[in-house]
Image (tube, rainbow, N blue to C red; front, side, top):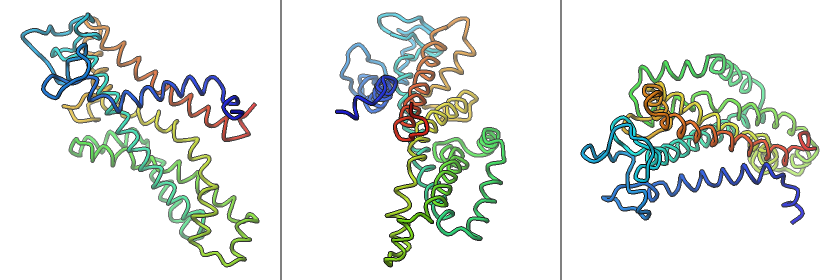
Amino acid sequence: MRFLKQIPKLAWISGSFVFLFVLLTICAPWIANNAETGHFFPLVKFGPETADIFETEFLAAPDQVHLMGTDYVGRDVFARLVHGISNSLYFSLAVVAICLILGTIIGGIMGFFGGWIDLVLSRVMEIIGNFPIFLLQLTLLAFLSQGYGVLLFVMTLAGWIPYCRFVRAEFFKLRNQEFVLAAKALGASRTRIFFRHLLPNSLTPVIIYVPFDLSSTIISLGALSFLGFGEPINVASLGELLKQAKDHFLDAWWLAVFPGGALFLMTLSFSLFGASIRDLLDPRYSD
């Protein structure tokens, strides 16, 4: 109970929004789906691709039937927004998870062994990291086929580098600490020292960085989709809705307000939640 009282209000508020977005992501197939696949809420009876051209107006303003209006082909904006948030969060979580695992393993190897292994991998990091990352992503996506596999590869190409640097620095700092030297003196194997003593004590900066990286990944995915290089064309996405808003800004304000507000609130919530975790785990930032 004492620990719960120490959690600041900002952490509770941002954490509540993060929980709502995660819940929305999980429940998206049941919140907004058409009658063919079934739905639990009769008020939301449209799927992300549902477009009844005989009964639905194009670029219709929000009303009781379409809570957030329709897009330029008559699809329900609320349904596409719900599935866009879900697709964006699922994909961003996959990107961050791969980058975290890859960066942690490589950074641990660099910090544990040092020497020529650290030198070679450091040069590789510098070569990749010195490219303008977003420009590199656009260039690769322009020449490669569009799909989630290619997009995942492009977005993880340099995303593992920050995690690698965090873990590498922590390994260098910890490998000469007394508890590690004591484990070596007792005959502990390299594998045990790596996974039992060094790795668990090196994850604090990684955990702190994850919400910020997730927020950044969501923005990057939205920007790529806005430019037409992100998620596949037939998949609902926040960037695709904002691209429609650019083309129909004077005719359909709802295409900009609702997706833009959702993207802003989602990234802000994860960033503030990350800042709250940082304050709780890192005493240097605490009051």
